[in-house]
Length: 336
Image (tube, rainbow, N blue to C red; front, side, top):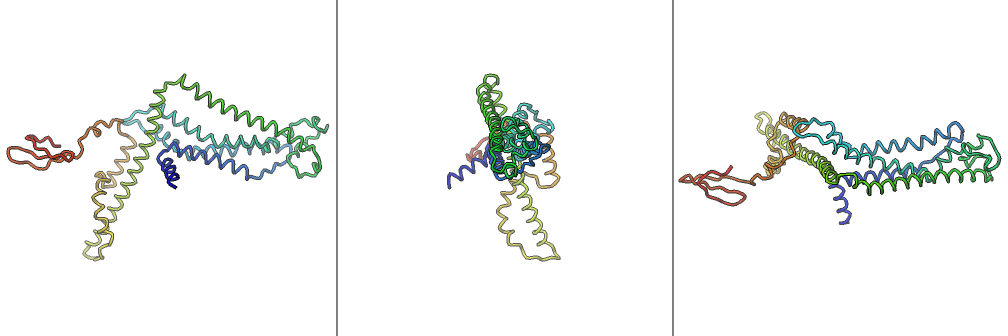
């Protein structure tokens, strides 16, 4: 149970792992749909190839766009591409990296569907049974009979080995194409991993990967901060409403029971509000975040002293200060 919790926490904290997990789930769903789908080849010369083409292309296209839709990199990439420049310049390499990662993950489920259909061979038999030369098997030259090869229940093929021979022949080609595509993809991936470091600046790749991850984390933290702010803003708005009602001279309502309970939380909520206490202020803040994102420089806040508080001034211009919990006496007011 503890290991399961650790795995879930890892996937929740890592957006890249979440995207990979979603793509794997889509691939498994594509396999399950194929195995549970009942294929009924029309067994007509003019419709066999059209039906097979639809089965081979329409589901992969659906899975591709579904993969693009559920991929978090899609939103991050579009936000970075479409946002105004503002105080932060755009990095085309980051957009390209996000686009490449999105396409790679979105193509997983469609490729699984295509490979499963080819290795199974049913669709290939339906599409190309008409293209088989009947003289290879029985000397027949009737195209209509060849089109009915996928339909094993047809009366023509009862107690006949002709259909099985044609099916094996076409399925052999289908599986050969499927395994060839799979082998090509594996070799392409292996060669890409081996050759890529020879033609790419690894330092530039690390920078691109870092800033692409930064954009994802930044947007997530901003969304979480907005959620906390909205919750505290709503709480204070509701509490203020009930307090105004209790102070009304006409409506003497009893004091709500939860007002006393939330009183202790209001001080904590003040910190989360960050001084933004009006709708106009929040609208201006969101507008500024979109049109002028902050520059990527945190030197000021990183070197800022923590909790410096000047307490009092004594005789002879002596100041008593507390800096980071340490009480100091100085002749000049260095506390800010």
